Image (cartoon, rainbow, N blue to C red; front, side):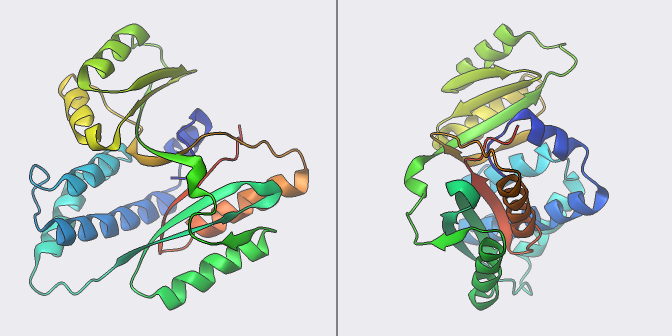
Amino acid sequence: MSGHSKWHNIQKTKGAADAKRSAAFTKIAREIIVAVKEGGSGDPNNNSRLATVIAKAKAVNMPNDNIKRTIDKALGAGNTDSYEAVTYEGYGPGGVAVIVEALTDNRQRTAPEVRHAFDKCNGNLGAIGCVSWSFDKKGVIVIDNEDGELDEETVMMDALDAGAADFEADGPALEITCDPDAFNDVVKALEGKGYSFVSAEVEMVPQNYITLSGEGDVKNMQKLIDMLEDSDDVQNVWHNWENG
C-alpha cells in the first residue's frame, strides 16, 4: 500500500505473510464500512466509493465472503463503528515526501502515533499541503505478466479502449493509469475482458522521485514506512522514495 505501484512492491505483496494479509483485510474492511455509510448503499453499482474499495479488496485476494460480511455489517442497524478520514503530510529522511492517509475513531490516538514514527526515523511531520502539491491523484491498475503470457500491445489497446489515460510495461508489471473518476469503469471493462490485478486503487502518484544514498537514511525510511503501516489506523502511506 506504500509508494507507487512498482514491481518490487508487488513482489513483497505477493509474498506477504498471513499476518500481513490479515492486517490488510482488516484495513480494507474499515474502508468498506466507511464507503457504505457515506455512500448510503451496499450496492457498488450505486456507490462509486464502495466499488473502488471492492476493486482494491479483490486485488489483494480478499475473499468475496469477507467483503459481503463487511458490507452487511456496515448496513446493520446495530453497527456503531464511526471513522473519519485524516491525512498527515511530512518529510522522511533525505527529504522524502510522505503522505499518510488514516481512518480513525480517535484523532488523539492517531496523531501522536504518526508523529512518533516520523520523529523516531529522522523525519518530521509538516502542515497539510506541504508535500501533496507534488503528487497527482490517479487510478492505478497493475497486471502481473511475470510469465510473459500476455501480449503487451493487446493489454495496452484494451486498457485505452476501457478509458485508461496511459499504459507502461515495467518489466513483468503492466501498469495502467487513468483519471480517478474513470477508475471504476476501467476496472469493470478490464475485468470483463478476463484480466485480474495484483494492485488496483486510486493512488497519490509522485511527480518525481528521490533516491537515498546513505545507508542510515535507507534504513530509517524503511523503518518509517513499516512503523506507519503497522498502525491499525493508517490505511495508506504514499511517498516519493525510489527504493528499487
